[in-house]
Length: 93
Image (cartoon, rainbow, N blue to C red; front, side, top):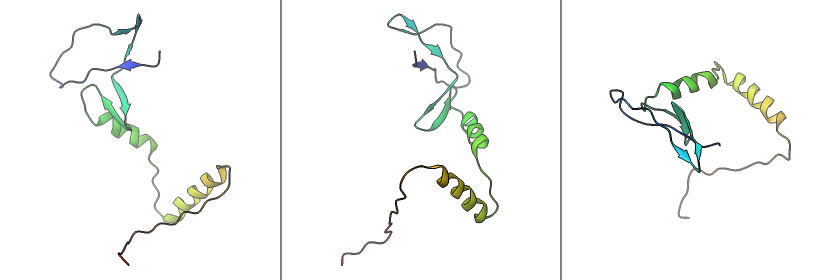
């Protein structure tokens, strides 16, 4: 079963043991989960999310390095190129 569960509480609160079942299938307990792109641990601490970000961040000292990475990624994407225009100022005229 894909569904898992976690308990959220303050660090000073202790939990007893127990399980949760749905349709006679026991759900797996996890200490952290990703919800809306943010990693939450069972104590609602930022540590797991910061760790996740650190493992995936790309540090680039110059824009040409970033442009090189973007070019490599764009070459890997199949399909027709689309150009989208952005307007950031609007007027009543």
